[in-house]
Image 1 (cartoon, rainbow, N blue to C red):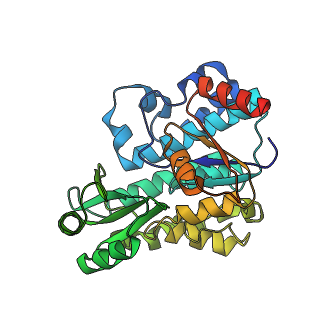
Image 2: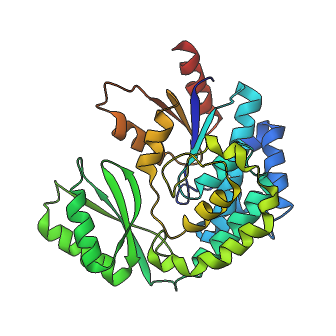
Amino acid sequence: MSNSAVVFPGQGAQRRGMAMDFLAELPESREAFAQAAAVLPFDPIALCTDEDPRLDQTEYAQPCILTAEIAMLWGLRARFGFRPEWFGGHSLGEYSALVAADVMPLPTAVRLVHARGRLMQHAAPLGFGAMAALVADPLPIEDIRTLAAKHGVDLANDNSRAQVVVSGEKTSVDALCADLDERFPADALRIVPLTVSAPFHSRHMAQVEAEFRKVLQAVRGDFDAAKATRVTSNFTGQFHTGRLDDLVDGLTRQISAPVLWRDDMVTLAGQASAVFEVGPGRPLAGFFKTQFSDRTDKAVTVASILDLRSAQRAFAAKEGA
């Protein structure tokens, strides 16, 4: 799969049974779950298969999603010879990308995101925060920025030219959405409240960054930062520099900073002509299609891989192209 990129969705993509068809058929996928289970205080397979409400809690969801995505990737590598050259991930998905690019081993990443999820979950009390997706093509982005600043709300995700996500204290987000609803008709701007347990990627997460930096510093010896130059950073929107201090800083600041996914997509598309989204959900493929739908100077093919069946279709189409 020359000149290809793989991207991984983040929290919110989780679903019951994710990666279980890979687990049933491929020993490489089972190895990913075994490595995660060895460093977690719970069984990720049980959490991904049982009717366990913890799968929607941040500190449990994050290591489970990461493990499922790497299990899928290792399975794709074994069955289809999938070896992408470029890597990206949305928020939590950046850790999947770093594991995929051999920047850090899976057990280290699992421990990191378990700690990250726990810190993020406890940064704000339940019910304090809210997030909402704002959808329009094109977005009235300057109006959104002005009104968000007025209400003390942050732009959490710059997902595409047609979607941003705002994050903050619930009363402030509600006030912003009401203000936007008054200014723009429903057919001009769609407001979609998100089901979240905290105001992620906002100023309210900054209080846990110092503690998470300590967690990163404790395992930085496990990182091969030079390999990160093929992985996009949510914090900068560019490829990681390859410097260890920059990698630690970018992952620390990613917690409260906006996810610059639109920039990440442009950076990846500058290198890859084919993008494969690997994970239990497929939000990123839609962002790529929106971002490049009317570009005549850059053709980017996008495929979503949710299970082995969709993988078979994606790679058969690639071979026939």
